[in-house]
Amino acid sequence: MDMKAPRGTQDILPGTSEKWQYAEKVLTDLASKFNYKEIRVPIFEHTELFLRGVGETTDIVQKEMYTFKDKGDRSLTLRPEGTASVVRAYVQNKLYGQPEQPTKLFYHGPMFRYERPQQGRMRQFVQFGVEALGSEDPSIDAEVISLAMSGYQQFGLKSLKLIINTLGDKESRDAHRTALIEHFTPVKDELCSDCQNRLEKNPLRILDCKKDREHPKVKSAPSIHDYLNAESKAYFDEVKANLDAMEIPYVVDPNLVRGLDYYNHTAFEIMSDAEGFGALTTLTGGGRYNGLVEEVGGPSTPGIGYALSIERLLFALEAEGIELPVNTGTDVYVVALGDDAVQKEAAKLTFQLRLAGVTADKDYLGKKMKGQFKSADRQQAKFVVVLGEDELAKGVISLRNMQDGQQYEVAIKEAVETIKQKLDGGKADE
Image (cartoon, rainbow, N blue to C red; front, side):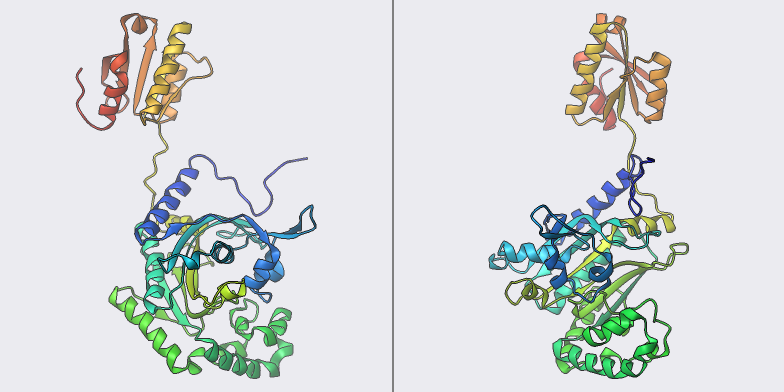
């Protein structure tokens, strides 16, 4: 059998994994500056969590979840998104009872959806997301959006477009829902089978359907903005006013809806306009979900969040020609030539360098001097230490700067400190 990674998954190899590490660090560091704290939740949950939390009418639940029975005949699901799990943890651990509110959390890790693999969309993919629970202040909606925008800007991305909308409160959504049912019922048979099922359960999702998006009735569907009550309008105006105060440009799109059932009030997406990015232009999406905590058994608690795909972030960087400043090279390569005593001293020195915070490596294949220097070149080593029987007898190493070719003789007992100074750009006694 030809063993390969399952369709829709990928191996992130050295040389690329450093970009992932860098991207995740930038995002987590930025979230920490916004005073969000990391939470780590299980990769699989009870299936019921996603049925209730994500929504039975969503494509995720109906078509895309990886669900299985464990040995106790319990139905479990690999998490398809992060919000439901974070909210479950928030309820289970009674984070709503902590004195400092709102509870502001971030997470990152793999998610799983069974869908057609394509560029920027895998069956196993990595999300970074944030959730702010416990505040119904429009300014925190703007904060979450500003955090999402700032994340992309930290990487130097320019071709960004922020789209926002409001889905209104429950009263507004119910009025809009009734209008949508009346609008689409006469042409129900012309809609795809999914939208026919959605018509009574969640007609808003018809507006988000990829199959029926060109249908005349979809294009002429009633706008949520025609059904917003005074409170919903005022809320959305405050969100926009806060974005204006932060000088974050945006476009209001009345047709923007989110694909999950738990959203209300603010919804937003950030898109890439970069040439060559492809058809999937959405980088991130999120919004407010004031009923989700109650849906999973918690007290009435407002919330807002977003999630972004690390894969799509990296594609956007590639589309704009932005190289991440990652270092995949080695600081020091130790070339050892000689008997067992030399080899042990080389192993000792390599270990000491690593403990001192220096990226160091050595030969483990018994290569000759030329082969070891080739390895140092392939690893883009900044310095090479040469240790042979003569050097060991004198208690020194030969230290070569691989950038300018200069070579120094350094006492073995001073080697670690000297190398650290040279890597830091300082002057060492020679």
